[in-house]
Length: 375
Image 1 (cartoon, rainbow, N blue to C red):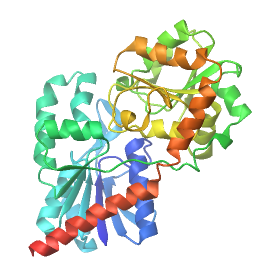
Image 2 (image 1 turned 180 degrees about the horizontal axis):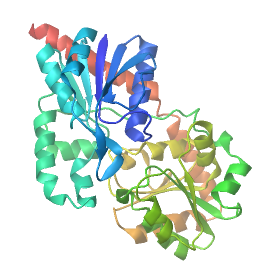
Image 3 (image 1 turned 180 degrees about the vertical axis):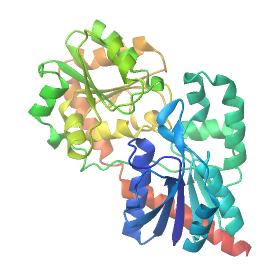
């Protein structure tokens, strides 16, 4: 099988979408699937055996880490020369639209997966008036695909309610060996807590952007004694966030990857997630694999993975009191955090990436079989 993977974001950027793309390419390699990646030109030439075809782009004015640009005629020629059996579009926006047009010209089927909540993001950048247009684009593009995949039941239901037909699920997993309680490290805990390891360390991991609403954690620090916050990640909202938390026990760790990230997860006490929007939230299940109970807004796949009162607590988006209550419930009862930690780890061990990725390949095979039958 030969797959051309079109993605709006790729290495060296670090985020949940890039992580899923990289894991997908690694799984292709294990299963003998040949692939090329079509992404914005950022100097990356190959990953997991897949050649990267770069597309010119310019930084997005509202988020410079993102790039905007359309595939060129040379892109089409290089993809055609690869002779893909199938094209997978990681959320059609600009590069993805080029992928769908390429699939039509080549006469090959296309799988489209949902990764970017453009509808909600528009509100956080003063562009809420674009939400109807974003849903129109979503309906038009995803309904033209041969198979459409959502990352969580919540997103699946929202897509169907807004006119996207026949939406399947491409579930998310976790590498429970890469993220594990055994990576707990006293030096890392000292860094996360700014030298106060005896305190309760709340951890946030992800982009530092306005829609993540990290400011809301100030209420926890002010109302739950002995709590501290460590922020792992970076982004355009960091300067404003540093000013917001000035004088409070907050440590900004910047980007961490690999074993450093695993140590950060395992060395904290509670994973706190206030994001207003998420398509899944890979960081939540990574934290659970490291043995952290979760206190999270009910976004993306959170309700698919967090069992209320067993592995954590959830709250409605912007319910700051619910956030505070969830943290307080864990820290106020002796032994509750340890009990939730064990339950979180046990659940994460059932969420294998290879199983989730094999389900994706099954979708590919079904689409190709349907095309052969039609021919």
